[in-house]
Image: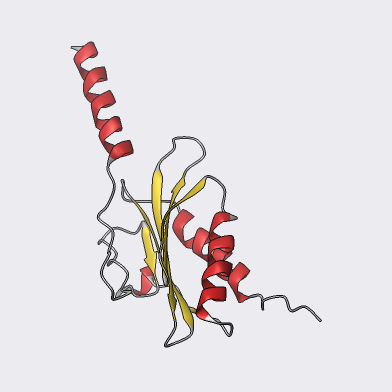
Length: 149
């Protein structure tokens, strides 16, 4: 009985580790909606408790994307899995249990803002990890780009 429980737990954990959400791959840079759980934050969330602010940028969209990539990859245990002209997607793993969070950054060339989404793949609570991650990334992006004299 105990052995079958361990096997079931192993199979379930492998399913969690290998499962990947379907990424939005259309031409519209909309972020996926947040689920009803509190372990997701987004600039496009309909619930105030899940909403985070956009961050404006003044440089060209290509330069803004490069800055977003650097800000995202400054996060520990982060792997970039998708890079397009206006969209970055990455997987961030937790330190201890290696839970995976999905992070998206959209560079909106019309509104000249960065839009964000960070969500845990499993569970209900993330103890504020996604909100803190987006706050750190937003703080890095809020610093004006360096200029060369």
